[in-house]
Image (cartoon, rainbow, N blue to C red; front, top):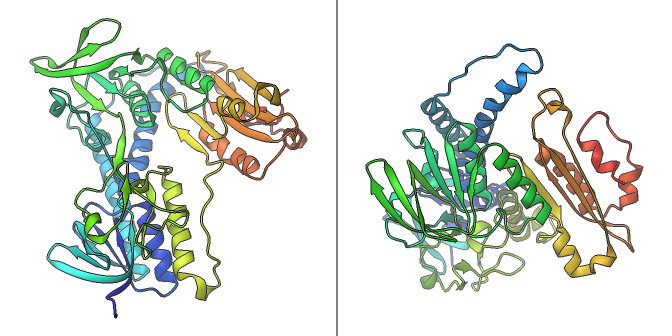
Length: 452
């Protein structure tokens, strides 16, 4: 059978873009379909606009800290609409840039919802195409619970385009997104109430990291309502009223509610059943080669619900392209490893980790099989302002092998620092390797090689 394309990609996000460009570079005839702006969650309503808003929110602290260094006090003002327009402009610039990269690599772009008609046929609008191989890379979507009044709440999709800055905001959820936006809004001057069902935010992170981030955020003014659930949302003249269930039932009136309680694979309307693609627990089932139940259909990124991080989707997409189309270019079939993936939360204070948490390491090796190194200190930049901002650094070391099993940090520049530490952890560095590394002084990062 003669196909229209060697590869048709559903979804022009991080994974789909990476796979399509690399496959095309090997000579494959490639098409990609996207119903939204090109770039996916990360570029449009995730990593990029979120990080820009994090930067914006941090300037408020710089004005205050500068006074201790001799700068005269100022009364700064902040304009929400200026930020929203600037962020949206950058998002659209990056989207156009990605379209240009597709054109440069001879990848044909179709705008619209792509749907699988059968195992080799894709429909986009009123057009249909056939492809020898298909890659599904449609990402995920934010969810909201089915409680009364949930229509009055927004998700991370809408937060970037709010016409007015809320004076009081409830952020429901203690994961990455909720914690990051609680910090952003607080830094921009909004009174924030972060509502979490558990006693702490950032479930799955090292317990000391969780405690340090939550304590740091509370010091900066975020109000935490722990062991609390929202059971009803009501529109009132003052804004919206949340009916809360915790130790006792109570209410909270705010200007807006951001729900950040989870994301699910964005599979609606894809026609997976028509193509014979198996799903489980709401995600596409794949093997280590990103292959679905149909041997010529593949899936990468958040729609597979493996590790939902942008660099992971990119790595999966490139590994797929190398394996399926790169043989003539001398590429060896490969799949990626999910061990020691560094991750960061751009909270305030920032948090990051690579490798095992202390709790995970104890479960695998026992407490007696580990040596834990940690330090807490105030970074030099805050020595003159004398703020409460602290840094936590922590290494989890296996006693018998001396190998560093995990590294964790909370505080200023944490993500920038942990990226380099992740190289050492991935290579299997020992604590002695860290000790043998000469410190770069005066930096916060040097503490990772001077821990005793």
